[in-house]
Length: 164
Image 1: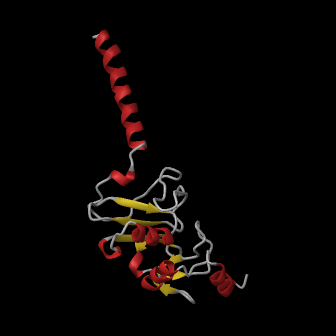
Image 2 (image 1 turned 45 degrees about the vertical axis):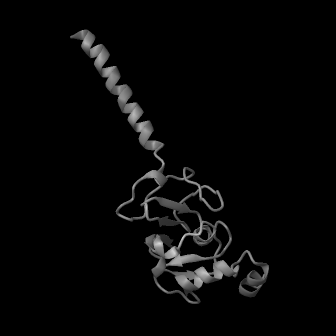
Image 3 (image 1 turned 180 degrees about the vertical axis):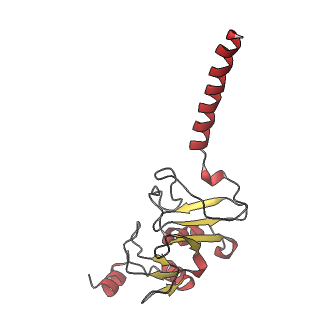
């Protein structure tokens, strides 16, 4: 019996440690997100597929769930728009989530309102809100502005909006 305990318990502990390490390193992009919900993530573990920056915190982040139920994570809502364009993905085929500043949770990106005078990770300037804000625009207007280059990285737009 003593030999059994000396062998069995270390094996159980080893399996437990291996399982914990496995779940910590699980790639969220490989999870089958059949429920189509925004997923939680750990800071500095997920890279934006457009700009390759690591996501730190939820603020300004966006998520797109494709037809294969794979979740793609973005550090800036503008990156999601440019990524869909560059990958030739129909934006209407994606389930979109964006972190809303006013309610501090993910909301349907198509229902969000965006202000363009905010500091964001890629400096495009679009911050999402659930409720309309003064000077905010809807998702479609934000998408068109991103595709046209009408964001704060454009010096002419920056000067017009911020006066700087």
